[in-house]
Length: 635
Image 1: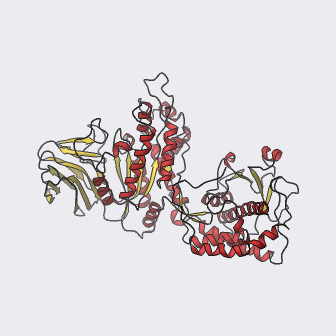
Image 2 (image 1 turned 90 degrees about the vertical axis):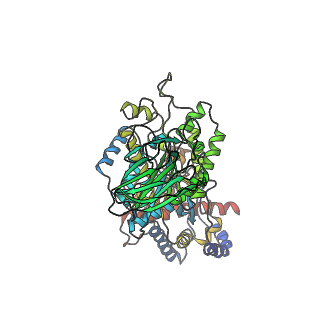
Image 3 (image 1 turned 90 degrees about the horizontal axis):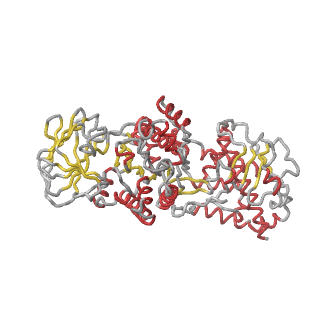
């Protein structure tokens, strides 16, 4: 199978400098076609074989040029020291021990490429967020980095995302408490994301059975003063900047007091619009009190941020919510409030309620697709500079009242695939939480250990912590491993030198479609293997599953015996290559294409750097082999 770029994901063309390189290469295309006739190589349709051009007096110089190009690629794709992952805490280690016991393997973030340099990904969908984290890590950025998390009841109590927040804050600094509610959504639960004390409020949400009678904003929640002088108190921990979100419709004055002293009082005009009242707090303040003078005043939230750099995670979790219900919030208010928060990342954690409503006949796939797409588009329009990550639903079962409680809901897989498709088309990354927690049967395994409530829907305790740990671990690994080519043109030109400019006009699957490659055997703990995997991953060619590969690569030191299907049927769609050290001779008649490793210079000692260099060389050899085959076919 061939790797195709996700439909709808923006693909920037290689700029004019690279086009010039191709133009120069085209001049020698005729020479290349003539020289193909003299190549002494086994036809790749019959078990492959060494592809060798006629000897040339310039062969040694050309090999040096190609090795230098491979090293240049390796330097561009090397892991950034500034993106080194932090050590796991004792709590994280305990959670991942639990994950192993539950057979919850985690899952990689699917982070589409948005800019290519040759076959290498130079920029990804999550780059706005990753670059913001880089600024915090380097100390060059003095502003906060905000994550806006939308979700349903899974995060309404600030669970799952609390682990995400804690890990990001521990690594990049604390930017404050972020968006808070004046009171809880229900009469129970923690007050971690609300006032520490409140009295006199009535709550409405977009998830209510009846449409709320008051306008909804960014949080999807509105608290309405039910008595004159309804109050809410907030503890302060170094926050000096605040913003109050309220609705100027039937409202009385809203008073903000700091340590019992008046700070600001609003002056309503009753114009019906949403209002943002910004205020500054003394750095040593300890307590903030909000007082709504008049009954019927609508408060949609209050943000508290620290003055310096750090991460803030705003939780917008509403029980029973889905994308259709979030769309009930007034677009103008949502857009204005989201712009004021300026998120670097928007996290969308929906899908569980969509699965249930489809099975109950209360929704359709057409409605789910339309409303999820509209919701993502609304977010992207309000915060065009932000990255976006969609998190799929958990394992979903019929529940305790069914004859088979742990039978999986029938539309779960279809909803996950639909979310993935829409996410990639709308410029978002995707994380498969269902796969991360262990796929089919995972809710039953969680329940057996007491990690899911008896409703068989909502995880609890360490189960929630584990899901948060899996998510933030994958997000940080994606940040650590994502390429960041500072000079994409130079990377593309190095690839041209490595492949050979004479073959570029005939390159099979050019630029963005590197052939899927699997390494056999594969031990990711080996630095050399890790380096090879890295360069293949950046080209989106790496696959851990051999059945998805187009090329199977036997690693150095592995027995040069191909899989049975290749040895008996020959490489038709699936092909085989063997990495051969430069000092060793390729076995004659071997069914695998021998790829001779380059003569690596003695100063290239780091095993990972050597692996990336070998990986670039390997990929170029496979492309050269396919390109020569294409040239023969074109004769």
